[in-house]
Image 1 (cartoon, helix red, strand yellow):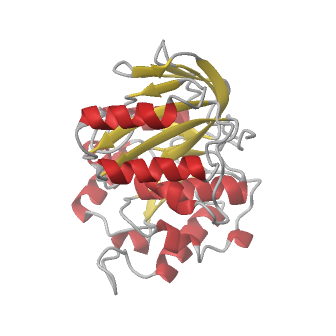
Image 2: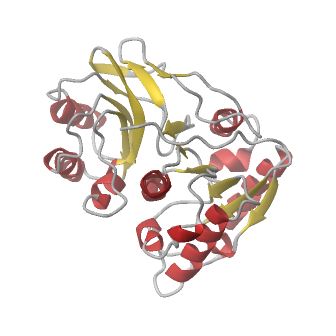
Length: 310
């Protein structure tokens, strides 16, 4: 896998878009997150999809046309330096069916942030546009509502405004010792598995693959990880970084499952990174050359995730 094009670093005064590609979000938390972005010095425009409630399906924010139109405009309009997603849930894959990629200039990357269901969008911008992205907290999440001083908010804003060189995982556990180099990739395991066979799936050959998940019974998580293996998605992977697997069963069973599914691939594997659901999470950049040291518990970024702002 080749490195992806990094966006310019965000600066105070930059205009940013807030959209939803998935489910309706908590409006009070969204307002708090918007205040936090404004307090950071950014000009914020909240798109209609972020305010939309349910329509025909209670798990979708507005209809597919609205979400896709907002996302297309936010990605295409050079007035916006960043696209922050307000929340996840379900619906990003439906949204991607209607995005007009022809309107978006691949040579003008911008910061795109989200996690969970937004994994589908981060994978899509990598494939369709060649852009790096950020698996990080969303505007209507607690981290944004709390604003500056929140670990997740602060580490995200540092990642998208400065040349971060290293992520450290103090509580991580070595499954397979070693050092691996590759381009960072991954996200929510369920979404990566669901994207297989689509025109936005990006195999992990040559990558440092990050995986996390939430609310999956252990046997379903087993099925998801096995599907990634059997589909050849993980063929040629350089190393594996595992985050949280919240509410996926007894943690001891999950740990055994992760070792079972990944320890035979012949690559370094590190579990327990503080990236994922329902924790103060670090932001994981996607598309950046990096070195994973599973014994030191570090991910060293060999190139910045953002370029110097123009």
